[in-house]
Image 1 (cartoon, rainbow over the protein chains, first blue to last red):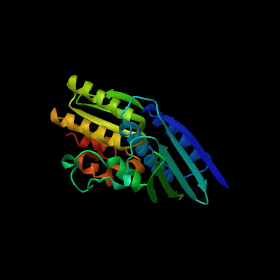
Image 2 (cartoon, one colour):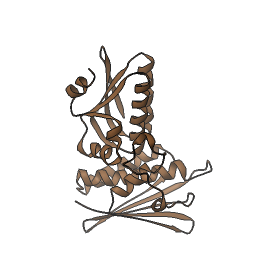
Image 3 (cartoon, chains in turn orange, blue):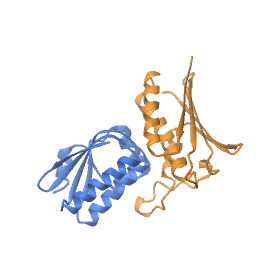
Image 4 (cartoon, one colour):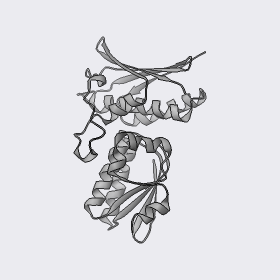
Length: 138
Length: 111
């Protein structure tokens, strides 16, 4: 059995929580455990926030596409945006053992996004950033 | 996110309800600034109603804690759900903040 969720999100901060609520109800419907859901929602939240806050130099309206497929105890997520090319896999993640006060800002969200999924892949296809996340259901 | 206030003699309790994300973090910082300008030194944050936090939420807490420290006070978090607590631990933010298990423990930390 395959269960699919897809949504088009505008590049505005309030769209993040709206999307999170919809994802929550999709995960609940598919009986995803609270622990598993929390990590997945966090990873998606961090990536959306990065795109919306830093992905665009203009003030135009842009759309981000998110798709989730639940199949065979695995959740596959794909996030596509037309923002500036940005590969989160190459971002310099701060060392979490360095005291917070001494860290240079940036990278915290990407660290969390990577931490809570099993695989985290980036590609740039036809002027679009494409992030693919895979998470096993537990 | 909803923020409920309980102003005591030596401190204020802010009960957070919902998701601690970017807009909520801004809301919390504003609340803490208002408390500081009203001469409140210490703030206890009741996390029992926080079901979700992201990096923006972590930063908001850290900024609020620093502001209270700068005005000679303290920010103490308590009653965190396991998943939320884990975010503080894996990012090392737990070492930069005071986290208590209960309200009683948080209050004892003030004296």
